[in-house]
Length: 247
Image (tube, rainbow, N blue to C red):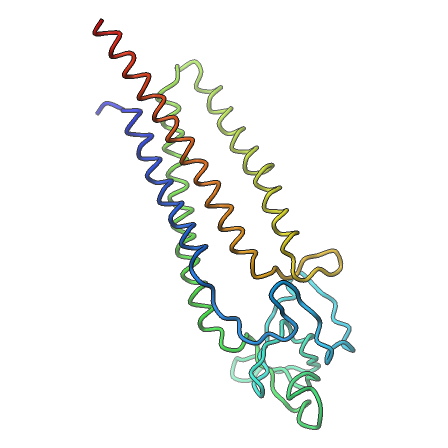
């Protein structure tokens, strides 16, 4: 079967469009409702006053939400809920003697139970599973596009130039991914940090996932435009060669 450059580019454009659509869906789909998270605003996080005496030291795994069952509010960690004791009951981590649970005052406050996991997180878990499925499709199709573009380069250049072309291709991928892309996404992470403490960002603002999705969709759109321009140039060149041969 004869290899056709135009058909190969056309297929890579179609797969890139599918990736763009998936990124758009992942960005546009409404996120889950996190519920009432104490101290969490739209673009910031403030430490609850009821647990300031605990002197919580943020770690990389600081986000470990717990649910105060008495008033059904979520704290981002047992320490931020002011919990001092814990035990495992029927396989469930239960925290007790919490200064913030039960309105944070009175004799019933310390007796209130705080459970591991956020309050009412079923919706967020469904949204996470949907996002994971779409992201898996994005990664799979992207790998196929890379393979198709690599085969296209190997079939269109002179055999003596294949090693040079492949080196240039992977150099461009490395520059765009690890230099330009890394800088852009690192800038987004810094600009949308909702909780910065000890020179570490422990929680992003609600705009972070939308900006990341929009940026990824824009980069995919740039790839589509580049491939489409290449398709037009090759088609125009083929028409010119066909016209000259008939003359």
